Length: 416
Ligand SMILES: [Mg+2]
Image (tube, rainbow, N blue to C red; front, side):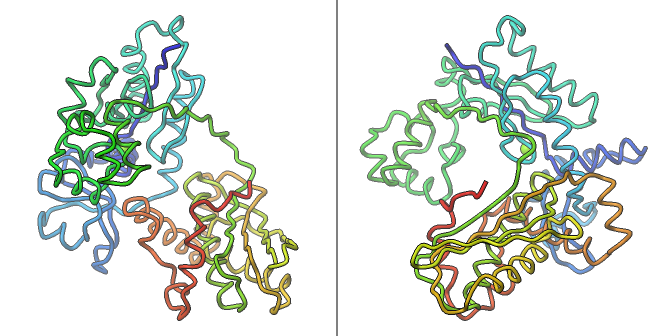
């Protein structure tokens, strides 16, 4: 059966969500003026996380320092990030998508894929259905999305990136030569800066040039695996399925097999911090808090042990997960048997909702501040890649634990 995939992408998500919230309260619409979501202006720190279309006209870019952006446009209006709001808006628009599609995959906080394959009897006109979804999101939630339609995820995602905002676009296979091939090769999904420079030096300037290049040549240019993949992409080929990720996960875990055995508590602490942070980041992205933390160790002779403990207050704060993990670890380890694997996981999840957020802010300002810091770090990593922020103690460490765990952290198995 021919597949039919939609990609729904919120237009300038963080900014739109803040704007929609203010409009609902009768305030001015940030989308109509030069505005941005960014860090602390008084302290002159922080970066631009999202910008309005009028701000874009001043050349303001996502990721640039707030100070630089202010120089380009002195009247730029800045609003602070509110990650609790984003989690709520993210869930709300995906819930609308779930009313239409049998299978929905959350791809990031503001993007999801809908597998509409086989829905032809209920929805004979895909473009009209996409417009209905888009309009329902706009009319009930107050922010706009683009919907891209194609026979696979790659084509759908590419289509949603065409003209914005509030639009439906198709990129069916028969439209590839017209709509896809004229695009610059650097716009192709998964072609980064380094790859596009290599391609352009070899006179591969457009997606069409890449599609029609010899695949062996492309492989020699950028490497075997990536070469085959982007050559397929340029030809509109992508078989990856839309995965229905269960909404309520049971827990989050991360473990890493160490390239060299760990023999000191200091090294172990650095790894535990990295693991706690990655678990925390995934929870925060999905809007969950956990009541239980556990730590697993595997010795060099392959014996494995784990230890867990319940928390009095559910958390998604990296530092709290880390401190608990460290305590559990010190109870587990005899401080001499070399360690081959370390793992941190959390379970007994609860939804982070508005009520809990306001409760925390009244009870404990310090915790609320930590949560905001964690979220700001997450947002920067989302824009610039996972390695951008190195947590304090890992950074100060004089031993190179980074190298030891990084080798296997990427493919490190999820505990759950
Ligand atoms: Mg978006």
